Length: 52
Image (cartoon, rainbow, N blue to C red; front, top):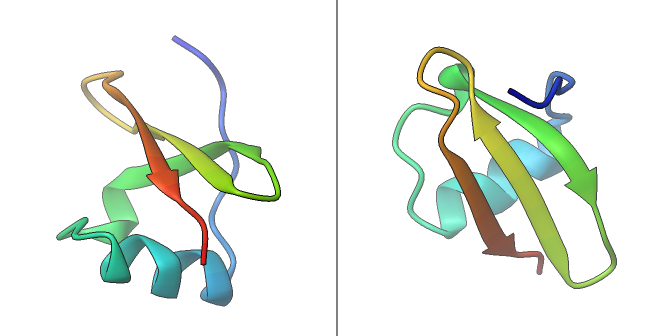
């Protein structure tokens, strides 16, 4: 599992906008200019979200 960091407030807003329900259970792996890569804290599932 990739290690992640806690998302900032702006990243949490982007995650909610993209449809992620519980932002407390997701950690940020990569923060690219057009994408936000997140990993689930417990299951290890990885998602790539548009960053707006």
